[in-house]
Length: 97
Image (cartoon, rainbow, N blue to C red; front, side, top):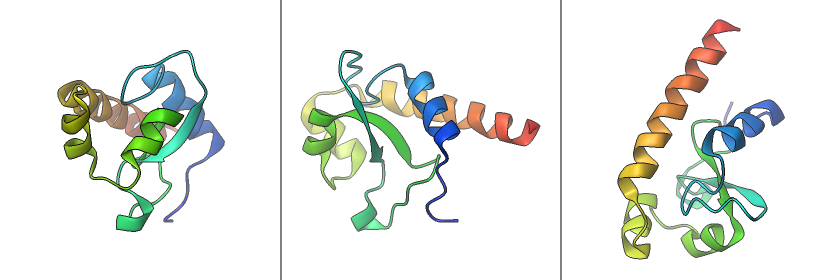
């Protein structure tokens, strides 16, 4: 499915990131942000959604994520490393079910 993010997967993503996936903020509400924007072919799937604060989500808009992280001076390596770790963990959790 193209848009198959479940409530349980969203909660796992929020817990795994522990805040905004981009800036790390923990003191604000989080929104579902597509790493690859919908306008560029992205979908609401566990592999493409991260929790983002409203400020980061609005700022990123439909930009390519790594270029946007660099322009904002955010830690691209931290983001990509954590994304890979969480993807592996969620895949192994899904396989165990």
